[in-house]
Image 1 (cartoon, helix red, strand yellow):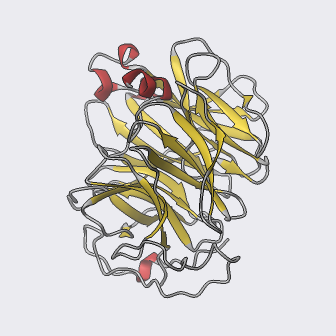
Image 2 (cartoon, one colour):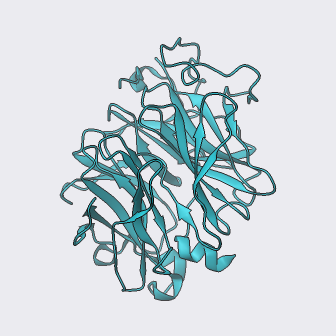
Length: 358
């Protein structure tokens, strides 16, 4: 599954969706009939309809962008208007090497333009709610200036603005905005040498939030205090809950959880066997999209589940590829994701697929 190392560690190594889940037929593995993908759209030109001549897969996914020269395009996060996506492009393959932030227009020739590209540095965004309409900015993590990962933000066309500053040896990663743009939730990660006794499998990352303008972070989920590893937090569109992936100490099994915005009310969403990661929300906050090998799939695929739990529904269907890091479009019609043919040892490209419909 896609469990990205902290940015510094990577460099050291080299609207209403119309979805009705209750009406979807699926087996216990979530591998039921393919969703209906014939729904007409009223989205702006270039965002709500397939692009003529675009490369397509058998499951209906449409290619958005494939990088060249062994570079890996990852972590799509839609702009608030749905006309472009923010992405991370790794220089040396999947989660490897320096990484640049880019914006990919979904109209025209779909050629990305770089917004932050620094030699020997990695700037990495989180799929989901990393681009905020209320804040007029997107948030990301990078080790620029400090040499370890901090939370930053940028306005389109502006300069990077540092949000956090700390010196305890951890990294602040995977940030996403609250819907009012006032808060950023993030993951505190520790390098393997600082992790608990069993190395990477025993990492115990915590979740925090911080004001957009900086200040003292507020801890929401205490990884070390609970013996759990907590990653990739995404704030709900309604502002009341945050979804994230969690595993208990001594296990490699990830599940999906939510927590209230004040750190109370922990709740497990998906507890079926499997590796469930990369969660983010539908634009109405009623559903979650995530990556999973549910049903012992050979490689993770994209699934959707009701935010209050239930049977996951499979969305992508390409067992030869790893599909992950999904984000729902603001108009509710599309799910963008990264896909690596043959698995995560290979560079990924960005795709989109129609969101499931009744």
